[in-house]
Figure (tube, helix red, strand yellow):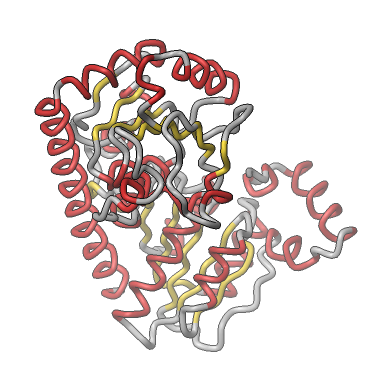
Length: 369
């Protein structure tokens, strides 16, 4: 979800403000104009500014929680550009935290928000610092950092980069390698689905995010293959005849071999990631990507470079049309499969350690201001 009004476009802003006021969303319209009420304590305030992406919102809540654990007296305000119920619930659970929609990148809105909040430090998530805010922060001498975004051409922010392309962009600027998705992913160890859903199956396979048309073709090809009678296929898209995983969860009886199952809820990702014999990625969302990597199972990707992961992820690049052949080779060569899974497990925990070190650096920087 993206609201172009936050990018400072005048006509988009006027249209969005009018629409919000007519639909009872005056608070959002006022926030875009920078008309936020500051918390009672204004000295040394930290402003965590998230963009509209879900991953940025999750990370904003996690950073706020870490700061609150380190400093109970630190005034913190989180702003976002799209409201999600789960993220708002996380923010509400943090003591003495202010949160609301954020300002658009317009001169008046930027001036008003800085006058009202008087931040001592700004954390911008999921974007390169927007131009007018960057200019205003530089003029005011407010220190800042950019988390999971590219460096600003205007102000000297510190960077916390999480992709290969971002690390390249930050190369000559002060930065940390910060794949915070690895830190937020639930690393489940017990392969519970193997003993529950797959108790009668030889192997469990999962294609995480194929578009529906491709998923339908894959399901048909898999059902026509020799392994289908012994295995179970999980898909990230609904296909005709597939069982919804949430419906199976109601009685938890073992699925019969040959089943095609639609993974219709995010809550199943960690268990599947820890239980599947092999997993295939197309272009997954960041939370899904790291949930899979956390499982430490054999994982392939249609285009490894498109995942934009830091370092050298030990992922096999497999054309989707050749996937069934690749899976058959894995079953025929268990030692090869085990080595591939071990390599991925080491990669994930290396990235998680990098993220933990970067998180410590971020919190220390903010608390020092």
